[in-house]
Length: 253
Image 1 (cartoon, rainbow, N blue to C red):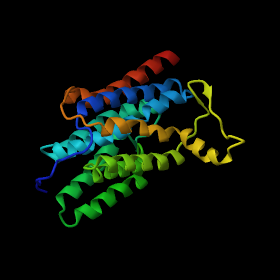
Image 2: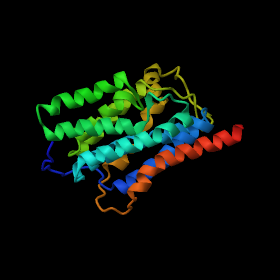
Image 3: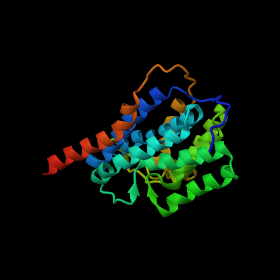
Image 4: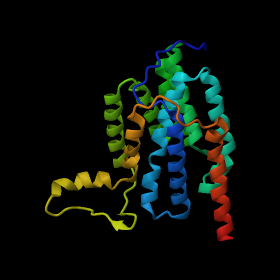
């Protein structure tokens, strides 16, 4: 496949260094909650920002990278290196793959769309959506779908907002409910406003709060105010998983 010239006008935030820094902090908080404080739903809520931010950074990167195939190989390599630590930290099996494989599938789907060889813009995204139905990857096919949707609306801020809101509403209804937020009990229903019960149920769903990433994705930031070296952006994932596992292993003996 040959690289093609693309119109790289993007409506959302192109300052991926800043976004990756926020995503890293969100991810670490989420994983601390998952490993050490599984009942603390508030930590998981903060962590919901991470994947949409990484997905958007992937979309921006796919538009600006000089070689999208090398970009894919980097994601694949980090995924392979991280897999043992992912298994140790969360108790997953070898065939339950970490988020970098999800991102790699999403990038392959974008590559097929960009290259348009032998109708790859049709069959490649479909294939990448089907693979998570056979092989378990973090965030499953919904994660790949979010990448595709963000790519489709990348040139319109209003479309970005509408798409992410709609996706998070859907995601929320399929996710886990939380009974409290940082120790504050959440109401299950309002007796004098039964019509509000359905709306309340959405706000109680942890995955709905991926919507917290929306302002960060849509804010118009062009200048790279923060530059993360690639080894930091990629290396923090396996490094923090190993550290969290090591602390937990030491603490429980």
